[in-house]
Image (cartoon, rainbow over all chains, first blue to last red; front, top):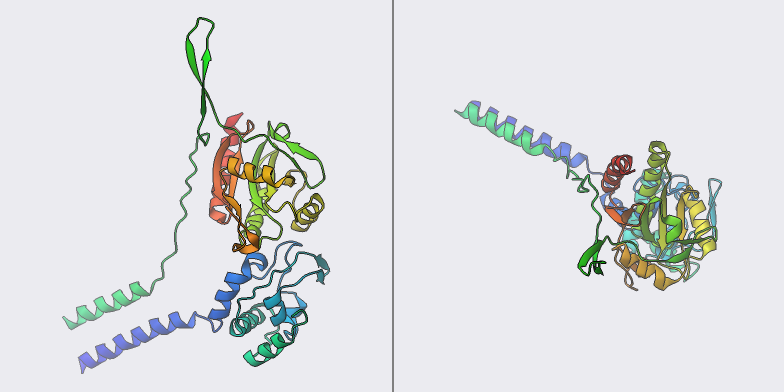
Length: 136
Length: 222
C-alpha cells in the first residue's frame, strides 16, 4: 500500500515536470524556426525591423490584415518602395524560392500569431495564392 | 530504505528538469591590444658600415575611395583617428543586417563614452550596385550618424585588396546569400593604421567586449 503511494507520487512528479516543460513550447515551433532562419536577419527576431531599412512586421498592413499577398511576397520577394506607418522603405526584399507552400503557411501563421491580427491561413489558400502571384 | 530511494529519485528528476543557462561568452581581446599582423624587417646600413635590422609594424594598405557624401577618403584622412572597419553590401540578406544593428548600438555607446572622435568605416563589397548615391540612401535609412560613419565605395579591386589588408575574407560567390561571401568581423584600427583587435559583428557579446576593452585602451593610449 505504502509502496503504491510512493509509486503514484513518483509518477505524478514525472508528469508535472514533463508537462510543464512541453507546455512552454508553442504551437508555432516550425514557423518560428523558419522565420528565424529566413526572415529574422532583416526583420529581427522580435519583428521590429531595422530603422528605415527593413520594415517592422508589427505594424505592417500585410501582417495586420488578412494575410492576402503575404505568401507571394515571402516566395518572390518585393521590389520597389512601400510606405508602412509613415516610413518609406526602398530596400528590395529578396525572393526565397526554395520555401515550400507548407513552410510559407507556417511562417505566415507564426508572424500573424506573434504580431498580427491572428488571422490564420491554410495550406490550400497559400497554394491558391502562389498559383496566381503577380510576377510569376 | 524505500523512503530514501524515493527522495533521491525525486531530487534527481527536479535537478534534471532545470534547463542550462546557455553558453557564457569569453572576451578574448587582450588588454594591451597588440598590433596584429606580421611586421616587415628591413636591413639598414648604418654610417659606421654596420647593418641594422629595423622592424616596421604592418599597416593598412594605401587606398582611395569615396564616401556617401561624395568626398574622397584615403589613408591620410584616417590617420590620427581610431576607427572600426567592416565590409558589407546593401543587398546582403544574411549577416549584414544584424551586424549593422549591433554597430548602431555600439555607436550610441561610443558617443556617450568619448569626447574624442571614433569613426566607423563600412566598405561595400558590391561597388557596382552600391554607388555613392545608393550608400547615401542606405546610411540615411539605417539612421547612421554620418558625421562619424563613412560608407565607402569605389574600385572593386581596391576594396577587395583592402579586405585582405584588414584580414577579412571576401569573394564573389553566386551561391552565397546576395552573391558575395564575406566575413562579419569588426576591425579596430589605431591612429597609425595598425590593426589592434577584431570582434565578431554578428555576436552582440563580442561587439560589447570590443567596446569595453576599446574604451580602456583609448584612455591609456594617448
